[in-house]
Length: 106
Picture 1: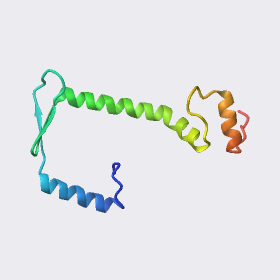
Picture 2: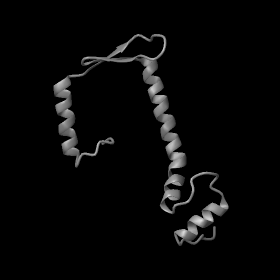
Picture 3: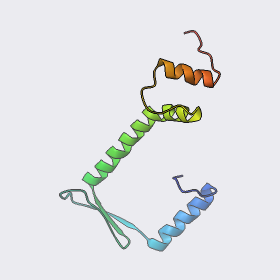
């Protein structure tokens, strides 16, 4: 889970457990203030619901962008096509030729 390159999930779970035991973080929801509130002091982490909403919204937007553009960027990198410009009919034909695929009749 996550982007940390541990060998397996058991090792990752063990490291997370050690970190929680060592730092003993506590999370506190504070009243909304002006601006964004995400503060860490020692083991106390403070945030407000407005900040949590912004984090969720940015995460959701990033997921949507990845779902939309991820496959095109992956395919372009796979066959070394330039990732700039629109992925039009000519680009897809080049992609299919390089992957030795044939368009099936619809």
